[in-house]
Length: 481
Ligand code: GLY
Image (tube, rainbow, N blue to C red; front, side, top):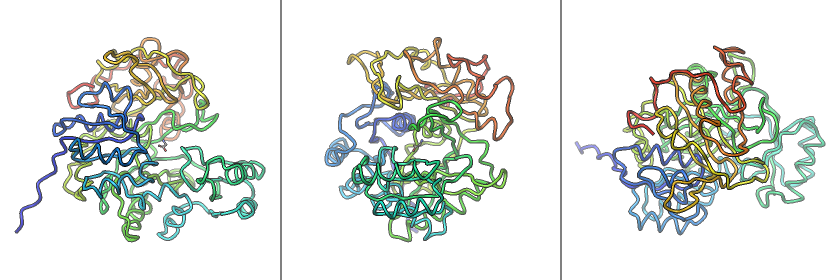
């Protein structure tokens, strides 16, 4: 009998990207005792300060530069964050150069990078999704809008930096969206084709699977808050906060999501000749009535979510670097995979003006105090170190920071998180913060008012709740963060 292959030793890991998602990835990977260095390309102000992490100024679109970096630095495994790098074939280029990669091939990443391809794939494999039509010209698109009765969703087929989806109340809005994408070229080639879809209603849920091409492990299901304003109002954003595990995701519902969505998608990609290695993100709408929701796919993404990663990875107790290295080697079945009890919540602090043009350059206050706390972790996205060699952090872009707190349940995690934000905690001038992250968890699963947390206004303008003892939970097996 041949002896089993030894486990990989991911001593040096490359993380590609510069957002909060990549800070969370780098932080979680760096906690592994197997890891001596995490190289982040290009990274941000948070990864620059993180233990064992080193930023290297190679951009995510520089495929040759990233392959050269992986080779020169002797990287053991590369973890790719952003979808545009995946769609451009970064994982393929790294694999062709002999590197282990946690991230799907360009063909497998089409599940995110072409909305029309993804919908046809879902139909082919019986994965529940809305009624839709793909269109290559304005006339066909407007015909589809009329057939849907005007109220519909118009999506640019390709990647459009998260802005290519327009949810329309009526035919006029849908026509405007179609013309903006197809005639005005608002998203360039990404909008040359559009998908017109039935507008689904219901709570949303993000389900992420760590995949090795054959098998998968689920991260705790999360709920995101995409609108900038409280009560889910105002323009869409990249996400203003998240929590996991979402109480709405009962074991029975998760079993149905696995059986009808996750497993068929991975089996279908493999059957098509494009096995998926990486994080498969199913963005779901829970249609129908509680508790017998009918989950349908809003979209698949070929990557981790942001900010969802900032609440999911703190809940993974096992060695994340080993998990990714074994998945990259097609050996996920050999990976220990244990989730921590309890919950995590993340609240995003965005620059003034977000999601429009923002004002940057504000000094971030309170990071050192937060760093002393075992139940709080601040992930950076749009920050920079102002003066090399100092710790002074300034805002540099839209969603500057994500503050994550953990607790025995979602309510306590939210209390901990909000208590760490504000004049006595992490803050910067004129930051944009939603004070109602988690309202859906409270109303959907628990009730309108829970133990002094009034939904929608239970947190004051500074983001403070009354103190709650959360000493029994922390973010890192005794390490502190
Ligand atoms: N939080 C939404 C996304 O990552 O696409």
